Amino acid sequence: MKIGTNGSFHLTYCTNIHPGETWDEVLSNLQQYLPILKTRLSPQASFGIGLRLADIAARELLTGDNLAQFQDWLNQQDLYVFTLNGFPYGGFHQQVVKDQVYAPDWSKLERVEYTLRLARILAALLPAGMEGSISTVPLSYKPWWKTDTARESVISQCSLNLTTVAAEMVRIREETGKLLHIDLEPEPDGLIENAAEVIDFFQNWLLPQGGAYLAQHQGISLDSAASLLREHVQICYDTCHFAVEYEEPASVFAQLQAAGIRIGKIQLSAALQMQLPDDLPGRQLLRERLSPFAESTYLHQVIERHSDGSLSHYPDLLSALPYLEQTQATEWRTHFHVPIFIRDYQILQSTQEDIVSVLKLLQEHDHCKHLEIETYTWGVLPAEMKLDILASIQREYEWVMSNE
Image 1 (tube, rainbow, N blue to C red):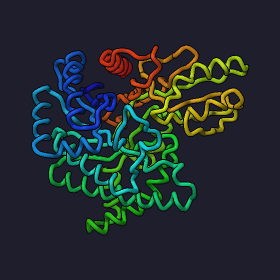
Image 2: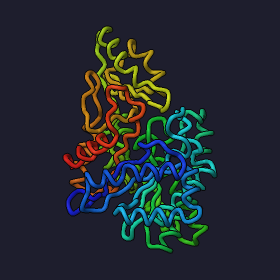
Image 3: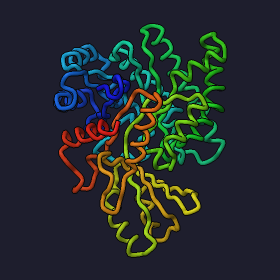
Image 4: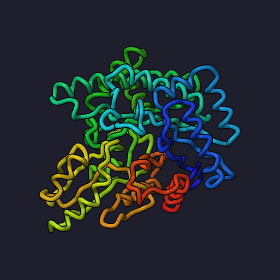
């Protein structure tokens, strides 16, 4: 659905909320939830979908006449697809995911082929005159690569593989007139996780290496190749992820803009944050309150901030909790996508204010047109926070619209 002045922005929610890896499961979820949400939220106007497809679903959608039938259903329901979530390649629900959410990473051919399938699907579904975005992993998972040499080698291969996808998106645009971009999604412990690492990757890897590769294979100048890469490789700004990194939205937006790096998609999500009490009983109570969030399905990276502003990382909330009572830090933030319409959870809070800041920035400058609500943890929330899924999704939309 379109929101903002003159309908400047497309707002959706990511369907990774709903368990389902095969195309039949995905379609069943869409048919169950989307018409009802459209009736409640956008009865008179088209309603956008943020579609998550595992590799198996993407393969199945491209067989037979599944894609044509899906397009017919979208037309009948007055729905449209403008963005895909291409981050999780395989299973994402009802199993241990943890660091395997990054596999295969961008150094692997399987990631390239999967993303090319997504590009083919999006090119077919995307309405004319609209950009299409595909969010994806931040190259790889940093702890997998223990040395600088190993990291440099994998970043180099990722650059070339991303360029292969960009080249196909160039061809799609020439053939169809539709602009697609792959949007790297920085997050804690990703191979690119903050603004500085994003800029370093573009300036020292993607543009020089990928640019040279694209220029040679397209028979164009290096400047033209760099321009194409900037169009077709962009950033997915997830408000939860950057909040966990303690990066202010205005600063990140300014840094990326100065570096000529575009934000192709903004995911509206909130992390858990907490001020650490000075006293032991207070910390013990905090640990007790946090423990239900230390679940076994997803990675919940923790970054703590000290009074001098320095940061320390823990790979997961499960591994961080034993240090809560003794750490000298003053604040913790953890990568747990909690509902965005709630600010306070008793002695815990969310980073909701970062979403408010992003929405205000968008009112001042057209940084990005794609907005996607990305709360995928409904199934693993503590019992007292679980609500009816349709009502919860509706409340997320209504909160965004009240703050846009």
